[in-house]
Image (tube, rainbow, N blue to C red; front, side, top):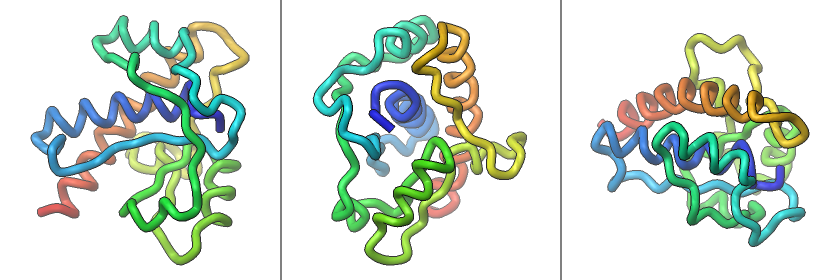
Length: 148
């Protein structure tokens, strides 16, 4: 929602996953929130810490808010939860692929979301990292299949 926890963690992990598959220079990965609360702010310190502990660097991230005219720039728009999914679908000026991020994780149940760790402790950020890692593998496979 505010682009300081889940979505920037997913951006960093997905970008690294795609690079590891040789797709890093063929795909642009960006994140943005549906709300304006944190525009311009860095990633939540807890998210940065968890990412760093696992070999990821999120230090350059600055929160942004998604704008409707961005749909023309992307082939795929991913949402962390059903509320953001509904917001993005309402914003879309035409039919565009907007899906839940976890829909790419074959082990996730249908409709599975990435929970918002903002009001919790470190364990919530660890959970988010595990969930976005699993889904990132599925997103990378989807993209590879689409490119080939």
